[in-house]
Image (cartoon, rainbow, N blue to C red; front, side, top):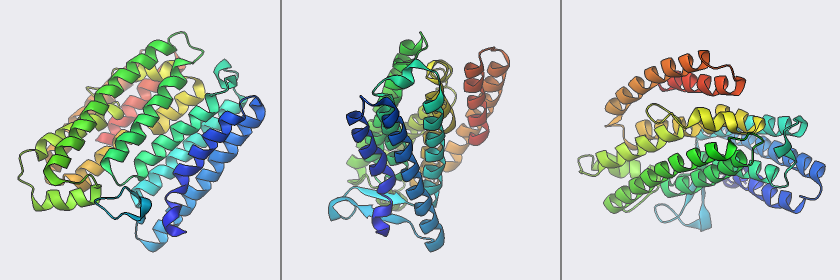
Amino acid sequence: MDNHLVLLPIVIPLTGAVVGLLLQRWQREQAFWTLGTMFTSLVTSVLLLQTVWQTGDPIIFMSGGWQAPFGISLVGDLLAAVMVLMSQTGLLFGILYGIGCKDKVASYPTFYPLFLMLGTGLTGAMLTGDLFNLFVFAELLVISGTVLTAISDDKYGTEAAYKYFYISLLAAVFLLLACGTLYVTFGTLNMADLADRIAANGDLPLIPVAAALLVATFMIKGAAFPFHFWQPDFHTAAPTPVHAVLSSVVVKLGIYGLIRVTTLLFPVQAPLIQTILVVAGVVGIFYGSLGAIGTYDAKRMLAYSTMGQLGFILV
């Protein structure tokens, strides 16, 4: 059961989204099913963190019984477990707000299933131990967030969704190129296995290229300077419950990825990467804070404030 515990926070919202589609004719039942699903998933996230905290060891699930580097692994270590618990708490309150809000979009039959798919993508990206699987989960997150914003009551929702989709497409290209670069060099995309092989062969010429591509990917995901320009429009136009989740936890995927890059995959290149992140963070603090001061739209102000807070996190 312990090994499967890392699987449950992903499978529960994914299954809940499928069942939610079957309940689309019963709006209120669908809404409370979604709330119950996310609460159940949150409980498993608490159990995951508790287990990892008590044992001191990560929980690893190998898909199909195939061992790394051939199999796809899910890994619940302390960092991933904390991030998943934080993310699913934010998602739970976003759904709770959605049930009581007056936004027309909350009555659409696909709103709550998409919300659960958003949670599936975010949770899976943080629990995967495989770099290509991170790409898959991140794209699930992007598609769900794009559609949820495109159907917003805000008249600029479609425009904002296009901006987010295309900047995320750039991040996807960077991430795929990084995966290809690392796979052709080391023959694996398992992050723990990659860390060992990079440490043993740190002078190979494609390593800095892969590091640069991954840093750019996660800076886009985290809306860090100079990849910040999509964030205010996207967060402002999103439905209010979605906006809350985007600002609080979705952009943290970029921060999570940067932590993995600097502490696990590329510790040798970490000092240079950290210098870049400090500069980007300082610019983000000033840009986000000044942007928040200069706007009178509450959601836009919070979007700029998020940018400033992300700057503090980077520093």
